[in-house]
Length: 325
Image 1 (spheres, one colour):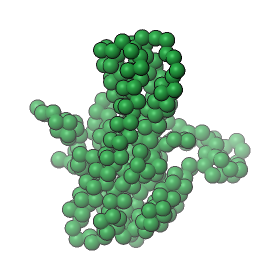
Image 2: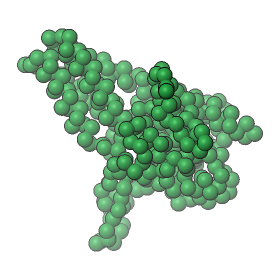
Image 3: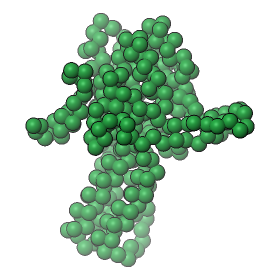
Image 4: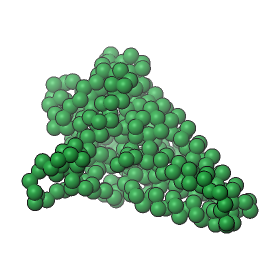
């Protein structure tokens, strides 16, 4: 959890290897061996976070780039340089992608709720600059709403047990001078009941082909509360978070975190507060079914439903410039 947030994880992994290969003094091998070295290192990095699809997506793209260079060059240095340049492009692309998500999300909300002059948005976990290369996904939409003068207030949950909301999202909101209020996770339903939330916007670690979405634990609860109170619930994520190979959320691997995060204060960093001997179940994520999600905000636009179902594959193919049958 030194690095967390799926876009940031992918970028950090790519750059950690870029630093290693940039510091090679003498690599005694062929260009093919250089590409194989990079592939093995990336596969190892991918194994660290199985839920986050962005990491595996970035690794696949980088492996393809270095393999292509290795097939045309005899110099291992060319392979390493191509890798470094590709990692740098990924960094720039992530920031641009996040800003596009913010722009599309802000515009969509204003178009959908024209009678609402200003929005109060509830978000969960941390999806801002500290979880991405910069700007953020769900928090990027909040930033865009604020920049356009239509944000009444942002509400952020503590996001227990690791407190990403209170430690990170609250910090970003205060830093950017965005009107914001921190709430306990368990206060979300009461906040909605008082009609103080216009929309809920969260990020995503992985989105299945049908729209089921894995995100920080507690997201599913927020989606249920939002549906009960007739509040739109949006997922904000880049297309790289969509995994078309998974038909539904039932196929998403859910990581479990250390029991210490619940047994001790400060997300496991402080003193023990729970009774010794108690068993702990501490999943890092939960899966929100697609039927609870109003729309998925991406850097290419907002994916909405037709006949109560998402057609994500069609959207992704059109965004990539492919024809659909």
